[in-house]
Image (cartoon, one colour):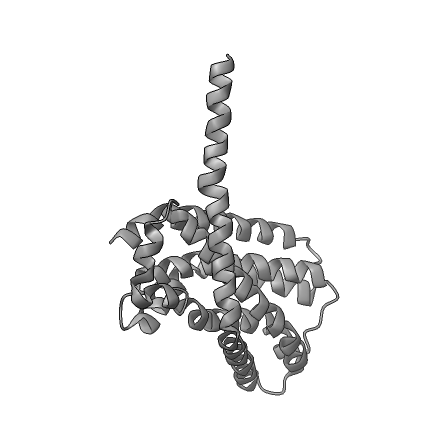
Length: 240
């Protein structure tokens, strides 16, 4: 029993070394890269804010219609902005064939994927949080439920970042990645996007029927599906 326990303890220690520590190191690397290129994050936010402004022109001066469609336009702006952010996810790694060097490290490929996806989720969440005041000003769509709307933005950003990171890795070696990424990403994230739009709309317009929890559960389910499948298939993508 002691020998078995010793091997079990050693296995847990080895697992911690091989999975947890490399994930922390890779995540720190990706967050530092995003911090050093924070001017790009500002450009992504400005693009999203301009998109919200242009969408408001399409509705016109109808205050009720603006408020009713505010959630949809918020997520449409974040979706369009996400393509600019996600397309550059592997820019640093593809320069000088650095990605091949990362794959030689004593870490599984899924560690690199989850670190990059988490960093992209943080980036998109910051952009989404920044777009909320723009939505409030342009669409008169204020809400006092700040924490729930932050949760929806975080979950929705996670739903965009996992498949977005996956397809960004798939198209990172192609010259037309800016065009291919939206074509691959948009159809896949429609279910999560619809759930995020509906949850945000309930927070802005009110939820008399108590539907918010159901839409949040649906959004969380799609997030779990995206993160699990993309993490499993990432190794095949980077090897090819």
